[in-house]
Structures are given as structure tokens and as C-alpha cells.
Amino acid sequence: MSKNIFKNDKFKKTRGGYSRMLSVCCAKCNEHICDYQKDGPGNLRRMYFDRIFKPKVSVSKKDLSCSKGHILGVKIIYDKENRPAFRLFVDSVKKKIIKSK
Ligand SMILES: [Zn+2]
Image (cartoon, rainbow, N blue to C red; front, side):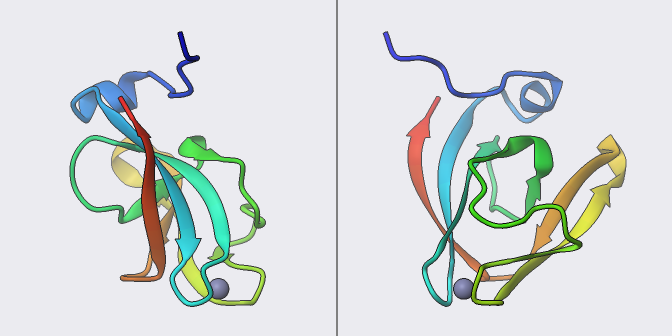
């Protein structure tokens, strides 16, 4: 049996209880940024800090950017859940589903 790599908490439950693990890359230069657990349906518009896995770039700055300096998003606090996240710019990243559950 493979290990469940997904986080399972109230945030996931409020989004329907299923998730996909995405490989997230810079859309301009294809650099791998991180893996990301996307909970529930819909487009990837925010990346919550607690769902970012194996980041290849700094996530402690106020912008999210790849190592070549392409800016992908800005840090926000998602009000409804008081949860820090990066709000992604439209078409700034490419993503590929690695795993779903
Ligand atoms: Zn880039």
C-alpha cells in the first residue's frame, strides 16, 4: 500500500474531501517551483502555504518567483480562513497532476 502523501484536514473537507497533487512550474521558463496539493474543484488561483511541498524557490518573500526572476504571484492572507497563500497571476504557472485522491 502506498503512503498517503496528502494532508487531510478541515480545509480539505470544506472543499469536498478530494485532492490532487500538482507539479507546478514557471510558465515562462518551465522551472519546477514546487509540488502543490490542490483541494477540491476549480482552477488553481491561490497556493496556500500549508499545501506547498518540496519548494525549489524561496517561499518566505512577499513575491513568489522562479530563480530566473519571473514573478508568479504575490503573498496574501486569505481572509475567510486567515490562511497565508500566494495569489497566482493568470497563466503564470503550468501544472501537471502527479497524483489524485
Ligand atoms: Zn521562470
